[in-house]
Amino acid sequence: MQTAPIKPIKPWFQTIEDVGDRLEWSTFFPIDQPVELDIGCGRGLFLFNAAVTRPDTNFLGLEIDYREGRRTATRLMKRDLANARVIGGDGKIVLSTMIEPHSVQAAHVYFPDPWWKKRHHKRRIFTESFVDLLARILQPGGFLHSWTDVAEYFDVIRELVDPHPQFTIAEPPAERPPEHDLDYQTSFERKKRKLGSPIYRGLWQRRPLDAVCKLETVSESV
Ligand SMILES: C[S@@+](CC[C@H](N)C(=O)[O-])C[C@H]1O[C@@H](n2cnc3c(N)ncnc32)[C@H](O)[C@@H]1O
Image (cartoon, rainbow, N blue to C red; front, side, top):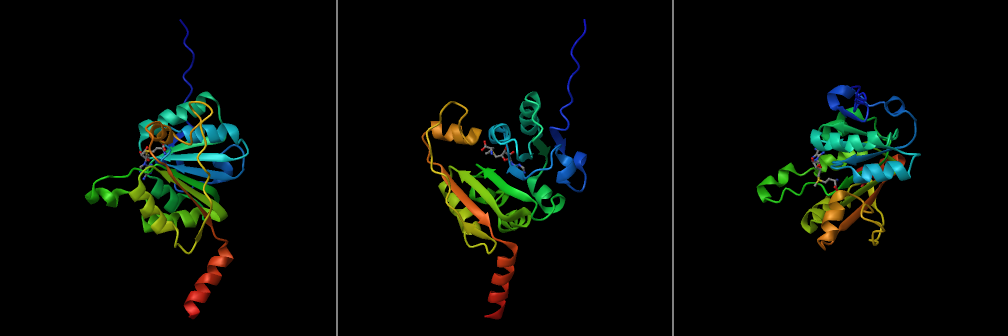
């Protein structure tokens, strides 16, 4: 009996080691077009919906949990989506060493792990240096989206991003009723909204590069 050949999951799922030292957007995706990142993409609902509805944008999910990353990549592969990929590994490594500065149109960080215990807060992804990394990779005018259901963590995120010299606060989208069961930003949003939890939505815009230089010059001269 003949069985259908198993389609390799590459290039939908690759590890950091597979990719190498640098991500060259023009060769990483089949079509050279704007790139958005989903950091901690989990089960990939955002990545999948965004790639289907916005074919003129490339979407890259970063996921430290290979199992989740492979599962997401399998969904993308089954739909043969050329504009969506997953890299398995620590997103902070990808941001700090592999991405060309100011080459990303938007970064999405949805429902980052809250690490509830106080002694574990240091494991949270949002830190001063993570926000600096986001400012480093975002293009001028690019957007940072971050949502969570954890009020205390959202305050921490706002305290880090609101006063950051390279970001301005923007108006996040209002909540709207879902039109069907997959009409949520992410799997976590679906889960938390079904439980009735409030969702805190943040949106920030990367300042133009020259505006940052001017701000730095002003603050240096006073
Ligand atoms: C609470 S889940 C949210 C998943 C998805 N964003 C959602 O909203 O449904 C957080 C995800 O971030 C991933 N993650 C945590 N730290 C990470 C890191 N440093 N780099 C990449 N992914 C990370 C976890 O493995 C997990 O899948």
